[in-house]
Length: 407
Image (cartoon, rainbow, N blue to C red):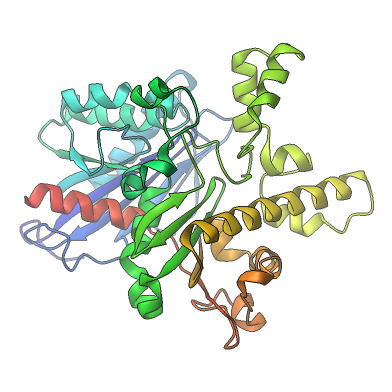
């Protein structure tokens, strides 16, 4: 790219999790601002397996590299590696801002915010609400605040898109003072759903403004009911453990089961948390993998493992079908069902199984379109439109950052 740094502003998006960091560079226009920003990143990559035996760095379609990171400082070292690579890639061009996906904005932050030390302190107070994700994003923010205070940083919240959800959907049936203390259903995957709200109309036409359910099915999974392209209900609640069965997370669970595990089976609080977040879901039930393609490839096995795999997949589909039914009732009907995120975008088999069990809602799939992961996968005689739209959370975050720094 030959642009001089005078007419090329770049925005770096960081998405930091417990064992991975994804990054993407987007070119903003010369003035900054989100208008005309390309939906695809100029350059992107990720570091996976942080804190594990093998840590892999991939970027820009080049072969993967294995990194040797100091285990005591693994996250810090991974961030430093990314920063070094980003500086190399910039080649003297101007970095306008860094956008961070921050999972939890609590009940205070409903819009992207420029970060200073006061905002950072606020965000740290939400760590207990998202212990798997929040600390890692905040570590990246803090390092940059200290070392490069000249670079604007913008937090984009995964809870923010759901601030339009009515109070009746937010409340938990706990004593009322729990609500006053901030114990409520927040909802997550907001950047993913916000992206859908921005592109669905151009993809699917006026039907997108009607009664819509978006199914974000990745290693984490949730559904969002939209009306007029705004969130009116979602399956994740107070934490990212609620709702659908996921790769390693249990989803909605009778709280009595948690009490039983602690009281009768004497599991410690830490152990219970570990079981619910890391040992449940598809992995827990199947005993084989958290990854649907791996399970689908082995479900015909004629042994006890095969039985468990079939049980895991059946439960996974059933939970999604049940929640789509519930959200359809809340919406008062359904016009459009959209699949997104890794499994939603790529597993024709699971999309087919889910739609086959939604008979009363009336989705009919076109087998060929579904097999191709086409944009519209429903047939002409389907009562609702069924679509596939790839997730693009990074672009949403980059847009927010461009807007924040141009104001």
